[in-house]
Length: 121
Image 1 (cartoon, rainbow, N blue to C red):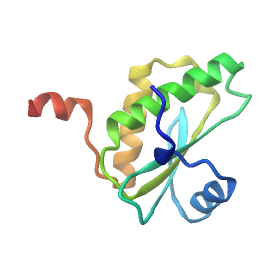
Image 2 (spheres, one colour; image 1 turned 90 degrees about the vertical axis):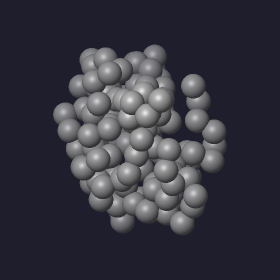
Image 3 (cartoon, helix red, strand yellow; image 1 turned 60 degrees about the vertical axis):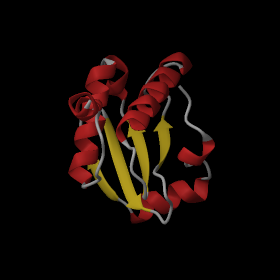
């Protein structure tokens, strides 16, 4: 599942702005930098370096992070930059999802998780 362009940070100047002004949290798999924006939706930017693995591995990590973001961040008003660390290539989607959800909670961003949606139905 690919995120639409309106949900992605794509320009280098936007990445620099988030990295310069944002709040940072991290775990063993990734760093997340977040700052508020004046938009009605949250956006995500991904940085997955060659240290993480081959192109196939990097693309897998990107798809997993995008899917987790799409399932977690339903609210608006945040720009997030996720920087994957090399250990992220050896974890399952479930661990990656739980890690992103924990980091977003630590940043104080309100979100909806899949578990909350299942309970609500």
